Image (cartoon, rainbow, N blue to C red):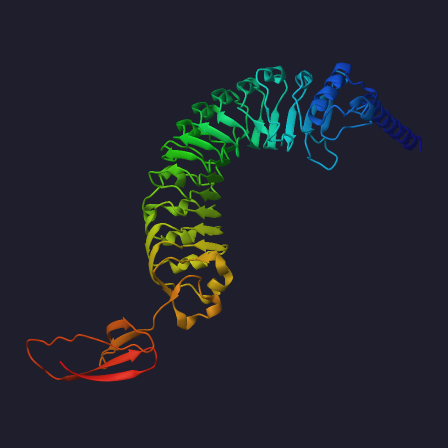
Length: 476
């Protein structure tokens, strides 16, 4: 009994000790003061963006405690509160909104523990545009890990070269702003970057060769700019890359050299550029690809010579308007995860493989604008499932069998096949000829006679699909 009592007493003591420790930790955080210079720098920096009307000391006397500011995060360093994240703009309902006239005050760069800085839809006035300050960012080099400027049409000028001093930076996002000029070469010095997004600006010039040093990159998005020239060879060595978007630029040359090693890439989007030289082997070696979008490039080449079976992870394959020739390979039907297949506006010939309809996840197939011929052999069920997501228009020699198709499910823009005629030998049943007839057309033939003369009378039966049978007595 005494032993049970001792155990109970010990358990109570341990519980009380735990509660006391937690309370002490809580009280330590509650009691931790904020560095006065840090608080003043925060108020002034925010005021530069939202306007002089904003009185932080009255509205938020304890920004890291009981009066937190939306978009501001803090952490305790050496017993004092410091700012670690600052987000300006309408991220949330109660976020800080920017004024028409904004300024980057020097106090922003006095937040010496700042890790993340974000501006969203903040610099929007085209009448009062603003540039990113230049040679001052090195003051945040010891802490800053993420910079984001998103949707700021009034943010103009160039990327500051001093961004290259931010060696701890892991994420640099300059998305949909009004930035111009060339991309600084020293961005390649930011070797800890795992995300680099410069999309939706007006950058010009070449992609810096130094980008090949960014070995930790997971996301590289340079889309929707006016970049030109060839791809740096070093980009093919970014083995960690998952998403690579160069779409809507003016880039040219071959896509990748033979030593490209992008084994982890899941998205490659280079639409609307000037790449040429065909589809080369490095692309087919990207076995993790889920989305491959190459449309609107003068690539050229024969689609039949490629081994598509190596891309079993593909979900989206867009090869529209790339100058492909040859016939559509039946091997594409082996890509069982494929949902979108775009082969429109090329120089493809032959008859579309019926096995494409067996792709279990396919919900969009575009074959329009080619030189495809013959009769479409997909089922009416397939056309009904696809609807307008099946495109085969602008193939003049392609038709669908009207006998096995309701008008409702007929493929858009494809003509119905004309009803044909077949000549049969009544003795053997073998086909001797065929032709195309409309319901009321006439059969016209030119018959020749052997030099051996007339050897007998035989019958040829003309079978018309309008169920008219004619017996022609011919001397052979």
